[in-house]
Length: 192
Image: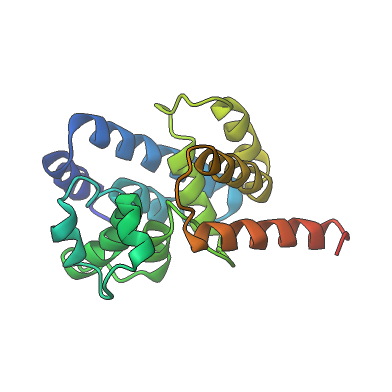
């Protein structure tokens, strides 16, 4: 269905060796999580390959692929640019119009409220890929293998706490994602 070799070669040309290895690890992890959670493993693999396609592109070039001008908040934390420009690049330059793939790429850094299972698979594949070595990565991997929502909650708490400690701006999508995940977990457990 998808020409994986074509996209693997494309990112190998566009990205540093480190980023290429990361992208391939995310693709493999996305396939694993997709199989565990009943979503299309080939689409997940492709989204994993392409999720960082614009990560190393200069910011002014990335802005050309953002259909809305970046907000002041996004300009103050350009690390979120690549998820926005990446989804648009994949759509415009590569002609991939599958909304699940585009959404998975678009929200793999910040998350968002009302994430699909596919979105969570890509988000967590990025956080738990083989080369990741942050504190608690093994625990997050174990959680992701058991429950996407529990892994999302743990990962979001970790991310938000880390950003607060470093006095970094927290994107509203991340806060909305945290509130949505927490609300969903509480609703499923009968707390709400």
